[in-house]
Length: 83
Image 1 (tube, rainbow, N blue to C red):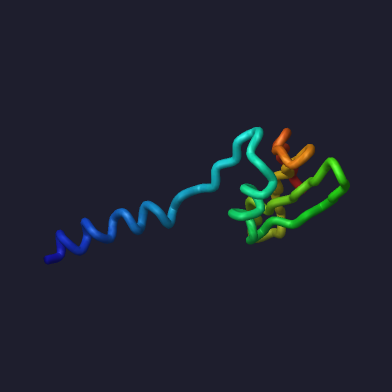
Image 2: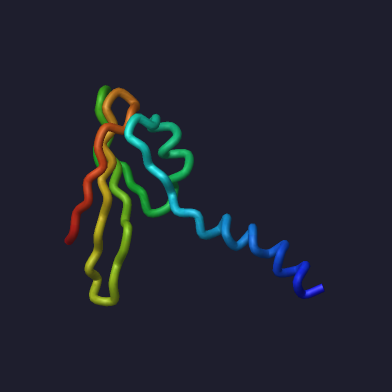
């Protein structure tokens, strides 16, 4: 019975540890559908949007971010920033 429980629990545990995947060319709608937590809109114009996502923070308050640059609704660049 324990083995059956562990076998059934394993896929659930693996699915919950899935890290987000970002691909150049993905749409802004795909990005925002999956990134509602820790992501903020920095700038939005008619042709461009920039999102900032907190990637880590240590005990001293040191934070790292990822910036996502969209042009005409498509992801064009991902940049990392510290500070």
